[in-house]
Image 1 (cartoon, rainbow, N blue to C red):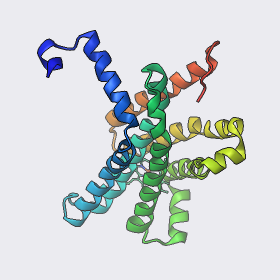
Image 2 (image 1 turned 45 degrees about the vertical axis):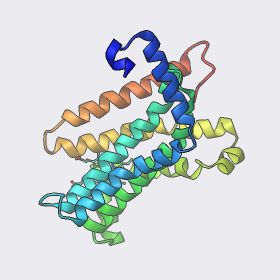
Image 3 (image 1 turned 30 degrees about the horizontal axis):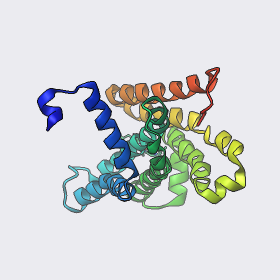
Length: 223
Ligand code: HEM
């Protein structure tokens, strides 16, 4: 309440940041973050079950899952810059979870497309992927997410070694542009670029920040 009465003074901001940092270390922070990550899926499934997804629920579900894959990709990429630039190292606890959710939403997006659009016919899915370039590009970005998801566990990190793990995870510099191209290509058919520009600017800024940090002379943190 003091914050509201006095406005945001520098000391109030410092207090807010301190409380935020300790909240991130709370034992319930991870379960809460996990539940929050499941909310979009719950909301989409609830909408589908209750006829709340409009005239074409299959399309709305596929698109909704695609949108959330892109949002989780942005959130995952935002963790390290926020951790370093805003000095909130506690955020690192959530990076792996966000990355795994990116992959999870991508798999559900692929499953929804394969099931609701293509009736789970592997031949039809294969032909459609090869016929429509925007789907081919989306599929390529999903394929590239596979090794990242497979090596997101402690044992895999130990087996690979930190240097190789980091090198492998630079695949994100290919995955993000491919995911964006997939989205752009899809929206180009409708001449609707507003959201694409927003995600493009976000992903561009996040990748640029990583590159700048990587090439910064005294940078010791190149995650
Ligand atoms: C990292 C992986 C992927 C991301 C980030 C992604 C993201 C997206 C996004 C944002 C949309 C547009 C949603 C909208 O208009 O609001 C979309 C549409 C679509 N995606 Fe993906 N996608 C990915 C992978 C895939 C894969 C693997 C496939 C299938 C092989 C696929 C098939 C589709 C289809 C068919 C649509 C259009 C749905 C429609 O027209 O109704 N995507 N995707």
